[in-house]
Image 1 (cartoon, rainbow, N blue to C red):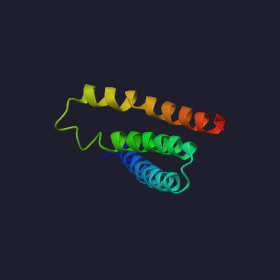
Image 2: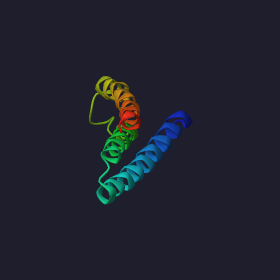
Image 3: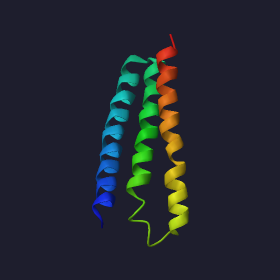
Image 4: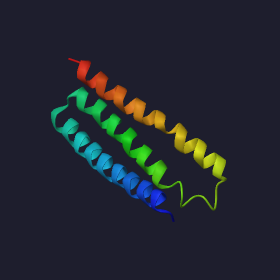
Length: 95
């Protein structure tokens, strides 16, 4: 696997692990405090985690799913980043 693909794999795995952990911590904070903003933040981190997982799984799934489909899913999943950023904005605007 070329260096660029390895770099993409490791960074995507890091995004998945870090965002998943932050999502779990945000969920626990929401359960403790019952602040609706924490539920929204949990959703944002979950979107980032799903994005990281999709990008991480691109190359291992290549033998089973056509390349064009995987590329479409990977590039289309960038909307999850936009959604995550928008959820953080919503959480900041709520009182």
